[in-house]
Structures are given as C-alpha cells and as structure tokens.
Image (cartoon, rainbow, N blue to C red; front, side, top):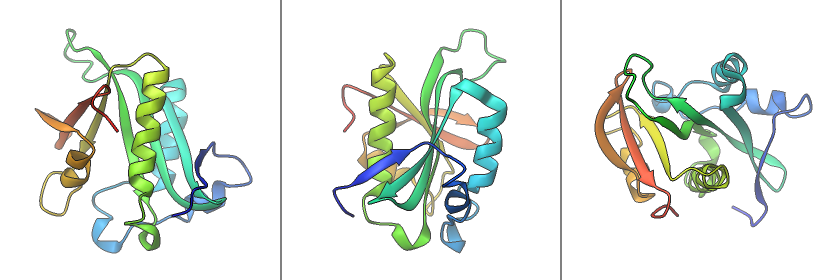
Length: 159
C-alpha cells in the first residue's frame, strides 16, 4: 500500500477497471459484484455514494456508502442511518489496508455531512467480515437486515 491511496468517482474512463474487480472465490457469497452495486446506486440516486479505491491511480477495490436512509421503512419509528453499503477489495490486494482506508473515508464523509454514527451490515459466520469491522470499532446492534448482522460505530469512537 502506498501513501497515494484515494477514492475516486466512477467515470467512463474507470468503469471497466471497477467492473473487473473480484474478491476471492470463497468470498463471492459475502459481497455482491461491482455491477450489482452500480445498478443499486443508479436506482437509489443521491443516497448512494459509489467510489473506486485507488492506490497510486491503480484500482484495488470498490466501496459504496449510503446516506440518511431509513433502515426499515416498515418501522416508522426507525431513525435515518448512514454507513457502509458495500466493500470489495480485489482478491490480489487484500490485507494491504485498503478496506480500512475505505471505511475510514466513509466515516469521514458521514461526519462531513453531520452524521454521528456509521452503520454496516454483513453476513454472519466464521468466514464473514465481523472481526474486520469489530477492529474498526463497529459493534453489533442485535438487529438483522435481510439475514445480515447490523453493526454501528459512534463516529467519535471511529478511526
């Protein structure tokens, strides 16, 4: 990992590189491909924030955040939430700090927009990313969303 890690908007110039990103085969059931994320970003409009993770201009991953979305529209008392919607670090780039960088940038963007906490959902189980998110300060809320665990971090506690 270099000191030139950035997040970039998706453009006609980098879309093919984003679509080529792949997790390891054993992780394919844990995170949707970039194409699905971009389709979701398109239909959700301004609430989605898709970004390419670059290291020195080289694509190494993809992150997508969401801002001020109601967690469950069937529960009228539920508060708006912002957080990490999708994180994918290319199979050959994992373990290099790119995921941590992306989560920190999402948390910074939530803070910039006036948010006080960040939410993430993930597949539970021994092969899932619960430990990764716990190391970044996310704590399970006890809720499930679409079969996924929900965890949050107060941004005053986040990296």
